Image (cartoon, rainbow, N blue to C red):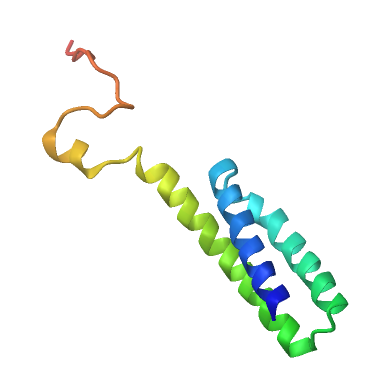
Length: 102
């Protein structure tokens, strides 16, 4: 049971790291790698088929949720509702842009 928790935590850490560094397309490569790695480890520890499939499914779900959480936290700082309310440009906006009426 400890190995299952270790795999789930490792999947969460991989998801967080991926969310901070790569775009969502990286999950296409990471998800099968997590599934294969988890299957090998669980087979080595003699998990049954149903228990192994359940742990692998949980690992994949946790990885994706961690990815989305990390990506949200990374990009939530850049987009602020306060900037839209007060009408002032945010940190990423350009100041001193003149209107071009011709």
